[in-house]
Length: 171
Image 1: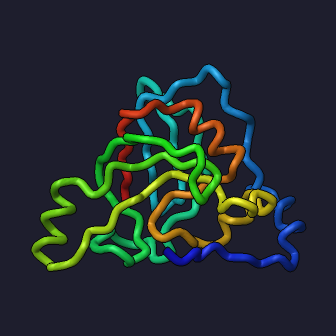
Image 2 (image 1 turned 180 degrees about the horizontal axis):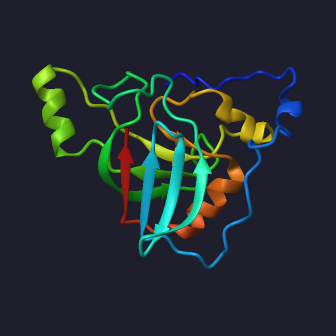
């Protein structure tokens, strides 16, 4: 898999101080989410508990984010209801939590189109070694279909969600 991460070193350090690019108050370490909601158009990931929003994160998506994922390599982030089913503390990115894509409907749609549905869709932090970019990564959608947050935000999400937590990804 080719890494599509934007490396724009010039002025990145200045961008880190633009209002709106810096994350808000930290999530309480004892906060637990029972659901995750991703709003692709708004570029937001919400951690929810009992219908209440615990925290909202600004995100980056796949490099071609409009529309649902249809096949491997289309750089789209899936849409639908899935489960956060496993985690990897030693991924190519700063921690990753796997999304159960492709689901049965995704597999069937891909089969009918005679393509691979793809897989390995994650919520993850920044590529290892690029944590210094912090929130400036949000200036572009750069993943292969994953949902990216800063490393500090990934630590919060990692702590707040358990394996088995449902995730809904909306257009």
